[in-house]
Image (cartoon, rainbow, N blue to C red):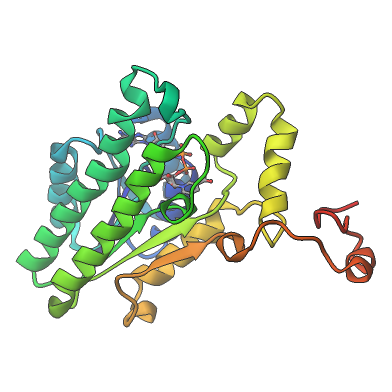
Length: 275
Ligand SMILES: NC(=O)c1ccc[n+]([C@@H]2O[C@H](COP(=O)([O-])OP(=O)(O)OC[C@H]3O[C@@H](n4cnc5c(N)ncnc54)[C@H](O)[C@@H]3O)[C@@H](O)[C@H]2O)c1
């Protein structure tokens, strides 16, 4: 019987990288609202010998997850579930726009969508007595604040809380749940945020400067940690929200560098970026 994994938001960015990696040894059920993106990932994985089955649907609707679960159980043993679909929009609370994309949609996708995904995953695991594993994609925004991101941050903290609840409630049955909290990852969503900024170069450089590793992450660097957490190699890891953020949330501000060391490495002492 094949192992099966469900990944939401898998047509782009981090979700796509996770689905592609998981497809090396799972049948992957891919949920997304983007039909072209789904088709592209399906084709790409098929060329590498893997199998992806697309479910076109909105994660904020429970029915989408119910459909994905049914297909997964039909194809084999549902063992892993990743809730990755997510959305953010900047908006100041003192002048909040009257448009559902700034609140209802973000809560519906990030928070309610993760809740329905987890509900179907644990219902399937317990029905089949499968020691399955869940990974929810959180964010550094779940633990630190950034101007204009109140709603997004509320949803990502909620994802961390949901993860802990599942780890505690279903741990006795061998089920594990963890979250991964990425920093700045170079995905289509972040590239679009750069393009929307008044100065795209400056917007990117700010994030690089703030991160101790002085660069953005590739989606594959997040996928590696997610796949590890889902695997038996992480058999004693549960209820955690693991930062994959280049050291960002450990820093006390940006700080300067050791001038001599920075010079030896060809870096600018004031921000650590290449000269
Ligand atoms: N990129 C980053 O820097 C970063 C940092 C921290 C956390 N994250 C989180 O990682 C996750 C993925 O982000 P990304 O940067 O890869 O974004 P992305 O926009 O590249 O991919 C998100 C995917 O989710 C899908 N999606 C959106 N709404 C949906 C819905 N209602 N139903 C089903 N699918 C839907 C989109 O079609 C897209 O394919 C999100 O949860 C995001 O909050 C991203």
